[in-house]
Amino acid sequence: MSLYYLKQYCIMKKAKRYIIKNILLRFEREIMKILKKFDIVIIIVLLLLSFIPYGAIMIFNINGNSNGVYAKITVNGEEYKIVRLDTHSGVEEFNVKTSKGYNTIKLEDEKIAIVDADCNDKVCERVGYIYKVGQTAVCLPHKLIIEITGEVKETEEEDFIAR
Image 1 (spheres, rainbow, N blue to C red):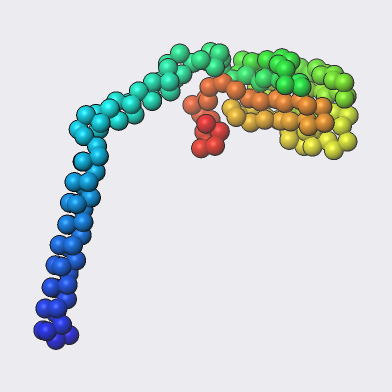
Image 2: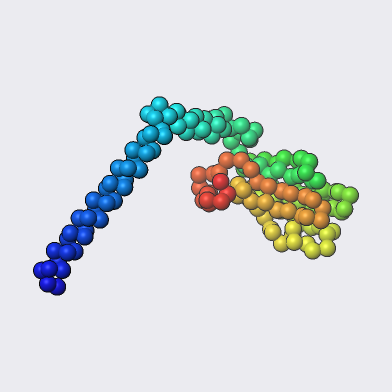
């Protein structure tokens, strides 16, 4: 590359920096005309205030579950039964009867599953045992939902979506 082209390149580079710098300064001036310093303070205060509900939920645990893992069973959108899983031991089995049929639910130690149903597709039985917070088992024909709620155990890996 010749010296002439090198000089032209340096001049263009300086010109580019100068143009960009002037554009940014003009933009900043325009923004400051629209936003006064007090407006910026108000925006910052409002942003900080927006985190208060999150803090309250974390501190007071508003969801009603105090330290534990629960299986919440709902039928037709109404709460049927809540079972604490983290302290459960042994095997327990019970039937949930609806107008559309029945489901047999089995609790085994800290896990819960739908083991039998008289629906046509039997998809709910194929889910198997659930035990992690955020997992669900659903029987659509009978409108039965089992969802695991509560606090995540420290040994349990928490994934991005479950939270």
